[in-house]
Structure formats: C-alpha cells, structure tokens
Image 1: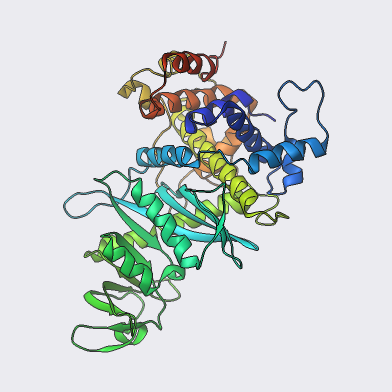
Image 2: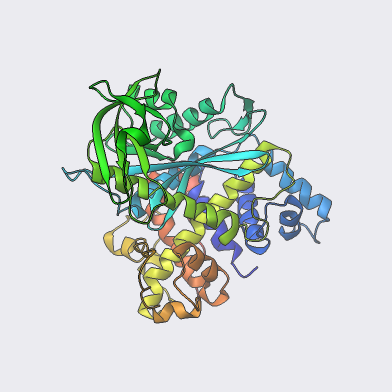
Length: 457
C-alpha cells in the first residue's frame, strides 16, 4: 500500500469520532484494502487486510475473513455520526448550488438507486462540482425487501414495499437538515408515483421528479390525456404549466415542465413543487452528477476491477462494504480538491505550515480554512473543444482532464505526496472539531495526542 495508514485512520477518526478505536481501525483497513484490491469480493478484501493489532505474524486468510465478518456484523456502529459529518462537508463544497430569484440557495438532494444483484443500494447525494457525494445510504434485497437502513443498519428488517424504504430514507435526511436549508428532492422516472408526490407535498418538501411520456396529466380547464399529447413538444421547445394534476385517478396537484432540449433523444416531463422553469430545468440537469458518482464507485475509480459483481449473501455485509466505498469516495474527493489547492502553486511536497502544526481544537480561521481543499472545479462542457490540460496535472493525466475524484486516487497512489494527504486530514480535523461531541478533559487529551498525525520531518 502506498497510502500511509496513519493518514487514513485520522481521516476516519474525524469522520466518525464516536466510534470505538477498533471500529475506526477496521474501517481504515478496509478502505486501504479497497485501494489495493478494488472489488467487492470479501475474500480479496480480506487478503489485503494487514495483520491484526499485536499479531506477531500475518494471519491466515480464514482469520482475516473472520475479522472482516465481525466488523460487517457489528451491531454498535454509529452510522448516523458518519453521515452527519458528510452532510456538513457537502455544505462546504456545494457552493455552486442554484438559487431562487430572491437569492435564496437551494440544496439539491439527488436520489437514485443502483443495483448489485440481487441487492439494490438507494443513495441520496449532494452535488459538489461534477460529482454527487453521498450523505445517506440504504441497502435492500430486491425480492424479499430485507433492508439495512441508516437508522437501524445493524438490524435489517423486512419492509412491505420498496416505496416505504425510499420514503424512510427521505425522512431520515430531512430530519437532519438545518431548518433554514431549502432542499429539493431530484429524482428520475423510477420514483415517479402519486403516493410519493402527495407525501412530499403534505410535508412541505420541494421536489423535481421526472415522469414518463404516457403518464396521464389533467389541466385546470379539464383538458386531459398523456403528457406527450398535452405538451406536443418539438426539439428546442419547452412549456411550463403552473397548475396541473398528476395521474388519472390520484390527481395530485403539481406544476409540470415539459422540455425538449436540442440534441436530446426525447423530452423531459418534470413534476415539481417549484414555480420557476429555469430553476427546475437546472436542478434536473444536475441529476447526472449522481450518475457520475456511481461510475466512480462501480467502474471508474473504486471498484474498477470487480464493478457491481460480488458473491455476498448478506444485505448487511454489502451495506457495510458500500459504506466503506462511500467513505473512500469522500477521501478521494477531498484529496483531489486538496491537490487542486496545492499543486498549481508548484508545491508538490508542502512543508510545515500553520495548518500542519495547529492542534485539532484550533479555531477554524479563514487563513487555516483556505489552506485546505479547494472548492470543486466547474464541470467541463460535454460539447466543444476541451480546455488545455494544466501543467501540474500532466503528471497524472495524458489525454485529458481527470475528475477531482480520480485525481485523488492518483495522489493517494503517490508516496511522495503523502504530506499533501496529511495536510488534508489536518484541515478536516480543524473544520469538523466545532461539531465534535462534548468530550471530557481525559477524552480531549487522548484525542489531541492520538488523532493528529505527526508533521513531516
């Protein structure tokens, strides 16, 4: 492994401060194992695990599998602590979120499902630059509907329908949002159903959800029919209906935007609670950022060898491994953004600075915060000439730009850039320290001593 174990352990300690030491160590080891063997195969991950703490010689494969299984079955993992800090980080790096005409920021909650047969992973992500970074995860069996949810992941239970699993995850995320945040659920046609739209309206939650062209829509003047007949769009046209009813029988009151952009194979029909067509279209375009995040997780960066194939039979085991993948995704994203902040200055091996020598309970001043990860770069356009590759990135890329997540992987692979990773975990500790639990004096002394990797000599 080219990545320093201490840096990854410190990252996990700041991300999940309420976990026990053994739990933090094991998650760190699994993340490093995924870096070495990028697959969801439990045997391959076990082979890459280091010997247990205090072991005089490497354990057998059977022993490493037992260690891995004990962690995956652990009933005392506080997943909520981890997701809360991911949400805090998403607010820091989601600065390009759209806003209303009054200048009020809008938080897009990108919801989507990806499949690891016979299981499915339902995630909610927040757009940060060109990627959607996850802030909540539920995993369930597609056939029996046995689900591991963030509220009670250690005790999976059977649900009556997939719809209830989706609504449960939305309730979990909205319950943890700050009261002043205006969040909007953005989802594809797989989530278009009258019961979900009605529930969101009853709870006062905003949404932009695509539905199929043959869905029945009724207008206030009594005109009704399939959406494709009501709108009758041609490429380049759009039409916004401030009042309409979704469904032939359910008749859920919504606004509807029909949009057929030039170059698209078919139009979009979007049911929404918002009242501005430009904002609605912008939010749905951003939904592709969670798809880019899935490509990172399943084929492009993390599980680039195994993809979505696995031999797991336990929904809890898959849930915990996906949680480790998403933590690794966050680590790569933050390291990539730290590279965007540091490497353009020609400082490939940053020495000691105010950020690297400050203790974790230092007040997060503007000077310290600006020494950390850069804000996400703007997504590159899909059409037209690509911008020239920066000189500092040519070390990692040959043909074109790398996403900041893939750049983070390349930095983690580079032993000479370990100080850059150390700078990132120092920044993370300072940024998240105000949100740490109310430690006792003894706990504070321990964490100051053990949660801070030594500065580079």
